[in-house]
Length: 105
Image (cartoon, rainbow, N blue to C red; front, side, top):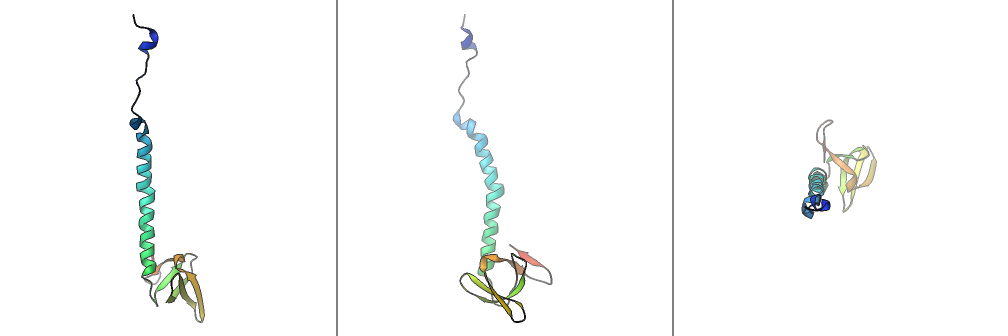
């Protein structure tokens, strides 16, 4: 007759199988959160690098203006007659294409 503890002995599972749910969660998180954010940042950088004098833009704070000049990291905006402000390129939220249509990136 076999001892009782032998009848209830557990088999050791493969360590890869035990980490499979964590790996799956990481992959899903990467696909749903990281990749779309990277695409959005790439599109935003592309839009900022293509800014030209005369483009209508909106800033991240909601100010509409026309690009008066573009330097390394600074964009000069004309927001009213005789009012010119310098802002960082990264604070441009999108280009204004029509009357109220904004191309957000």
